[in-house]
Image (cartoon, rainbow, N blue to C red; front, side, top):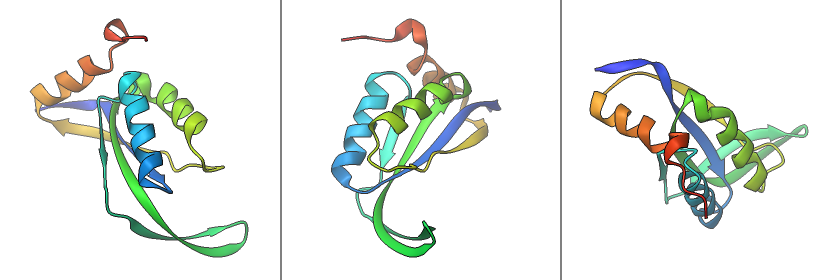
Length: 116
Protein backbone atom coordinates (compact mmCIF):
# COMPACT_ATOMS: atom_id res chain seq x y z
CA UNK A 1 0.00 0.00 0.00
CA UNK A 2 1.17 3.44 -0.91
CA UNK A 3 -0.19 6.66 0.50
CA UNK A 4 1.05 9.63 2.41
CA UNK A 5 -1.66 12.07 1.37
CA UNK A 6 0.01 13.30 -1.84
CA UNK A 7 -2.96 12.16 -3.92
CA UNK A 8 -6.47 13.57 -3.73
CA UNK A 9 -10.06 12.75 -4.54
CA UNK A 10 -11.93 15.90 -5.54
CA UNK A 11 -15.72 16.18 -5.52
CA UNK A 12 -17.43 18.60 -7.90
CA UNK A 13 -21.18 18.94 -8.59
CA UNK A 14 -22.58 20.12 -11.93
CA UNK A 15 -26.04 21.21 -13.01
CA UNK A 16 -26.10 19.14 -16.22
CA UNK A 17 -24.58 15.94 -17.52
CA UNK A 18 -23.27 17.87 -20.54
CA UNK A 19 -21.42 20.32 -18.31
CA UNK A 20 -20.00 17.46 -16.25
CA UNK A 21 -18.69 15.73 -19.36
CA UNK A 22 -17.15 18.98 -20.61
CA UNK A 23 -15.36 19.61 -17.32
CA UNK A 24 -14.20 15.98 -17.08
CA UNK A 25 -12.74 15.97 -20.59
CA UNK A 26 -11.11 19.34 -20.04
CA UNK A 27 -9.31 18.52 -16.79
CA UNK A 28 -8.15 15.08 -17.96
CA UNK A 29 -6.90 16.38 -21.32
CA UNK A 30 -5.01 19.15 -19.50
CA UNK A 31 -3.49 16.53 -17.15
CA UNK A 32 -4.97 18.24 -14.10
CA UNK A 33 -6.76 15.01 -13.15
CA UNK A 34 -5.78 11.45 -13.97
CA UNK A 35 -9.36 10.26 -14.07
CA UNK A 36 -12.86 11.65 -13.56
CA UNK A 37 -15.81 9.45 -12.70
CA UNK A 38 -19.10 11.05 -13.71
CA UNK A 39 -22.26 9.80 -12.04
CA UNK A 40 -24.67 9.80 -14.98
CA UNK A 41 -27.76 9.69 -12.77
CA UNK A 42 -28.61 12.92 -10.96
CA UNK A 43 -28.61 13.28 -7.21
CA UNK A 44 -30.98 15.57 -5.34
CA UNK A 45 -29.16 18.37 -3.54
CA UNK A 46 -30.81 20.44 -0.83
CA UNK A 47 -28.93 23.55 0.29
CA UNK A 48 -29.27 27.18 1.30
CA UNK A 49 -28.28 29.78 -1.30
CA UNK A 50 -28.60 33.53 -0.71
CA UNK A 51 -30.82 32.92 2.28
CA UNK A 52 -33.27 30.59 0.52
CA UNK A 53 -33.73 26.86 0.86
CA UNK A 54 -33.06 25.36 -2.58
CA UNK A 55 -33.39 21.97 -4.23
CA UNK A 56 -31.59 20.91 -7.41
CA UNK A 57 -30.79 17.87 -9.51
CA UNK A 58 -27.03 17.70 -9.90
CA UNK A 59 -24.36 15.39 -11.28
CA UNK A 60 -21.35 14.33 -9.25
CA UNK A 61 -17.81 14.34 -10.62
CA UNK A 62 -15.18 12.36 -8.69
CA UNK A 63 -11.72 13.48 -9.79
CA UNK A 64 -8.37 11.93 -8.90
CA UNK A 65 -5.30 14.17 -8.83
CA UNK A 66 -2.19 15.02 -6.81
CA UNK A 67 -1.64 17.75 -4.25
CA UNK A 68 0.82 19.36 -6.71
CA UNK A 69 -1.94 19.81 -9.34
CA UNK A 70 -4.76 20.69 -6.92
CA UNK A 71 -4.59 24.49 -7.18
CA UNK A 72 -4.46 24.39 -10.99
CA UNK A 73 -7.37 21.93 -11.06
CA UNK A 74 -9.44 24.22 -8.85
CA UNK A 75 -8.70 27.25 -11.04
CA UNK A 76 -9.72 25.36 -14.19
CA UNK A 77 -12.92 23.99 -12.65
CA UNK A 78 -13.90 27.51 -11.53
CA UNK A 79 -13.02 28.92 -14.95
CA UNK A 80 -15.24 26.55 -16.95
CA UNK A 81 -18.02 25.87 -14.40
CA UNK A 82 -21.40 27.59 -14.75
CA UNK A 83 -21.99 28.00 -10.99
CA UNK A 84 -21.03 31.22 -9.19
CA UNK A 85 -19.52 29.08 -6.43
CA UNK A 86 -18.87 25.54 -7.66
CA UNK A 87 -18.36 22.79 -5.13
CA UNK A 88 -14.68 21.83 -4.95
CA UNK A 89 -13.88 19.51 -2.07
CA UNK A 90 -10.50 17.78 -1.81
CA UNK A 91 -10.07 14.61 0.25
CA UNK A 92 -6.57 13.17 0.82
CA UNK A 93 -5.97 9.57 -0.22
CA UNK A 94 -4.03 8.14 2.70
CA UNK A 95 -3.66 4.60 1.33
CA UNK A 96 -4.20 2.79 -1.93
CA UNK A 97 -2.80 0.40 -4.49
CA UNK A 98 0.80 1.34 -5.19
CA UNK A 99 0.37 0.59 -8.89
CA UNK A 100 -2.78 2.73 -9.19
CA UNK A 101 -1.35 5.67 -7.25
CA UNK A 102 1.86 5.54 -9.32
CA UNK A 103 -0.23 5.61 -12.50
CA UNK A 104 -2.24 8.53 -11.10
CA UNK A 105 0.91 10.50 -10.31
CA UNK A 106 2.41 9.81 -13.76
CA UNK A 107 -0.87 10.77 -15.47
CA UNK A 108 -0.84 14.30 -14.08
CA UNK A 109 2.90 14.85 -14.30
CA UNK A 110 3.79 18.15 -15.99
CA UNK A 111 6.57 16.42 -17.92
CA UNK A 112 3.97 14.36 -19.78
CA UNK A 113 1.53 17.21 -20.44
CA UNK A 114 0.34 17.34 -24.05
CA UNK A 115 -0.70 20.75 -25.34
CA UNK A 116 -2.77 21.07 -28.47
